[in-house]
Image (cartoon, rainbow, N blue to C red; front, side, top):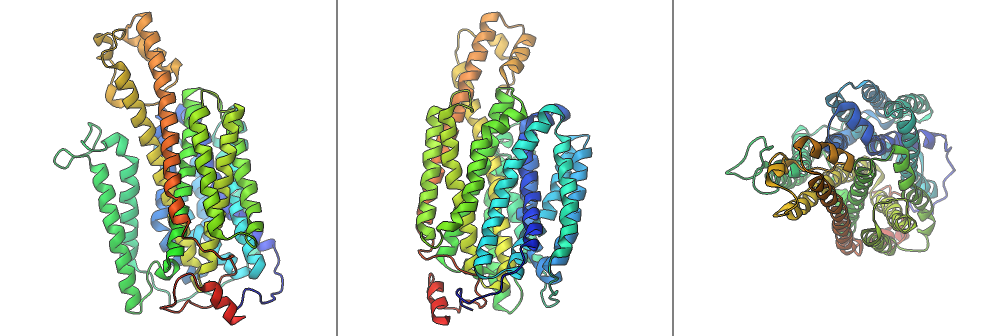
Length: 552
C-alpha cells in the first residue's frame, strides 16, 4: 500500500487509552527519582537502593518485552492490554503499601513485567487502529505522552512529596490504571493468532543476557570495577563478578541473535523477528535510541541526587529545577513531527545530538550549587530539545520501516532498547558519580595534615557515597574530631561532590558525541506509513521509499 493512499479518518478515542497506557509507565519511572528523599527517609536505605528500584523496573521490561510481544500477537493486543493494565494497578497498590524497601523493589519488578507486555501492545494497537498521516501523528503522540508523564510526575510528585508524602504519588497511578482499564473497552478487538508459538529457549536467552548486563552495570560500584571489593558476593581469582556478568551477558545476547536466525531459517517463529533491524539504517536507529534514553536516565538520576541528597532540598524544588528540561522534551516531542516532511531523519538526529552535546558541555561548565540558576536552565533546555526530538524520531523510523505484521516486534525492540538503556544509564550514573566522588575524596584526604589518622580510621573509606554536609557533620561529631578537622572534611566533601558532577556531565557529553556517528546512517528520506508488505530479501537497505513510489 502506498503512503499516499487516501484512508478514512479513524476516531481518536482509542488513542486516549493508548496514550494513557504510555503515561502509566512513564509516570511510574519519573516519579521514582522525585520520591528519592522520601523513600530514603521512609525505608532507611541509601539513595542507590532507590535507584535499584528503577533498575528492577527497567530490567524486567527489557528482559521480557520480547515475550510480551509474542503474547500480544498470540492472544490479540486489545485483550492482552486490558489484562496487564490490571496487573500494573496491583503493582502500584504494592508501592503505596510498601513497609520496607524490599516490597518496593518487588512492586517495581511486577510493574516492569506488566509494562513488558504494555510496550509492544501500544505499538500493535496503533498499527491496528490508524493508517497514513494519522498513524504518524499517533506515534508522535505516544512520544509526547511519555514526555508529558515526566512533566506531570515531577510537578505532582514534587508537590505531594513535599507537603504530604511520596506514597500518594503512586496512589494516583492506581486510579489512572482503573481509568485506562475502562477506556480499553473502546479499543477495537484484534483476532488472536494461534499459529504464533512462544520460543522458550529465546525467552531464557534474552532474559538471562539482559539481566546479566544490567545487574553487572548496577553493581560495578558495590562489587568493584576490577578487583573484587568486600561487598562482592564472590570473586573469580580476585576479580569482581560485575564486569564478568557484563561480558557473559553480551555473549548470551550474541547467542540469542544467532538462535533467532536459526529459528527463522527453519520456518519457526523467533522471539524477535530480525527483519526489523535488517538494514544499517534500522540498526543506527536502535543505537541512537539506546544512547539518548541512556543519557536521559543518567541526567534524571544525577539531578535529583544532587538536589535532594546533597543539597537537602525538597521534592518540589527538584520539580522546579527540572521543569525546563521536562517541558522542553514534551513540546519538542509533540512538534518535531511537523518537520518530517521538510527535514530528513538523518539531519534531525544529527542536530538533536549536537544539541545534547552543547547542553551537557554547558552544564558541566556553569553548574555550581544551584540548579535553578538561569545559565543551568539554558543547558537543560538545550538537552531537552535534543532528547525530545531524538526519542520520537528514532521510534518513528523503526515503526515506518517495518511491515505492519511486525509492529509487535518493533514494539518489543523499542521496549528492550529503551528499558535496557534506562537501566544501564541509571546504574552507570550511580557507579560513575560515586566512583568519581570516592576518587576525589581519597585524593584530597591522602596526607592531609588537618585530618588526623585517628579520625580517618573511624571512617569507612570503602563505602563513600553522596551525603549532605549536615549528615557529614553528624558523622564527624561521632569520631571526636576537632573543629578544624570537621571543617576541612566538609570542605573536601563539597569540592569532591561538585567535581564529580562536572566530570560526570563531561563524560555524558562525550557519549553523546560518539552517537553522532550512527546518527549519520539514519534514513535520508521522510518517514511514511508502516508498509503492509514485507521487504523482499536482497533489496539494498535504504530503498523503502523507492518501493513505496513504485507501488503508488
